[in-house]
Structures are given as structure tokens and as C-alpha cells.
Length: 233
Image (cartoon, rainbow, N blue to C red; front, side, top):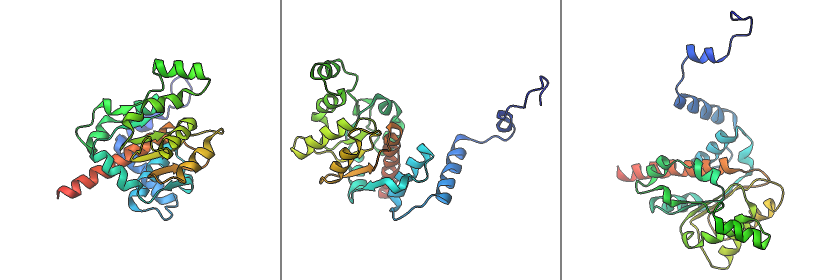
């Protein structure tokens, strides 16, 4: 108890036993490595899955993560080439670290990360047509999607429209991260993506979210930075 008779605040334990942020992160990863089932994931795939688990504190998430055989390779090539990153939510766009992108390719700028969900023309078209803005937002991005990494963590309708665009030959992203969260259009949008001949990383089922989408691009940047370093040795 302190002088006022209330319980001593727990933050004092941190004041007295200091730990750096990077140490906290490493302890978290150590916990995941010790407690989660790695399954049959490759080393690079595990880097992605482990970052997802770190973001969600969900050690069962790996059961739902699906990779196409070419997902990592295609993503690394896209990042090395400085391909666009498209996100379906400004929350995801804001969460993407430019420093991490630059670790994969120093030429990355903020302009390479696209999100049109809040654009006035997109909002107006959605209102006029009576359909979600996410559909028109990803249509607007179509000229920049070839060779891009597309992150869908929020809007299953955006994923459904992207699937159509791919199937009809309008665009060919380097990687689609299919992780929309929710109950409507979610399961079928992910199943359709996994049936297509396009590199993908999918969180199957109803789980997903913007944070997971961001964790994927950050882990892919780390993989690419390591590959660049090894190539230079």
C-alpha cells in the first residue's frame, strides 16, 4: 500500500526493472515459439504466421493461415521492385511502417501505399449505387495493382471485387493477402481467392483484421531485407 492506502501501481515494477521495447518483442516471440504449434510451415512462412500471432495474441491462428506455394517468393520480388501496396482501410495504411518498407527497398515512399476508401468520388459512387465504398475504392486502384501487394483486412466486398478483376484479366497483383474479418461475404471471398491462380496468403474462416494485414506486410519486409542482405554477401 502507498501513503493514501491504495495498492501500489504495477507500473513501478517496470520503473525498477527496466526492459527495452525490443526485449519485450523478443520475449513475445519466444513465448510463441515455445507455446504455438508451428505445423508444417516453412521458415519464411513461420515468420509471417508468428507475426500474426504476435499481433493478435492468438496462438491458434496458425490453423487458419493458408499460403499458396509461390506467395513468399512473389511478395519478395514485388517488394524488391518497389511495387505498390494497396490497403482496403486507412487504419491499415496508417499502420504500415515506411521504415520497414525501406528495409526491403530504399526507394519506397508514402505515395506507394494506396487506399481510396475515403476519397470523395468513391464515397459518392457508393452512395449513388447503393453498394459498399470498398468495391469502388479497389476499382479506382486498378491501374496500380499489377505487380502490387494487396492487403484486405477489413472489407470482404473489396476482396470479391478484386477476385472478379483478376478472373476477368483486368489486373494481376503479385500477392493478395485475404484477411477480411466478419460474418457476411467473408468465407466465400476467401474461398474464391484460394481457388484462383494468384499468389495469396489467407486467414481462412471469419477471423482477420487490419492489424493482421499490416503484420503480414511487415513480416514480408523482414524476409525481403534478409534476402537482400544474403544476396549481397
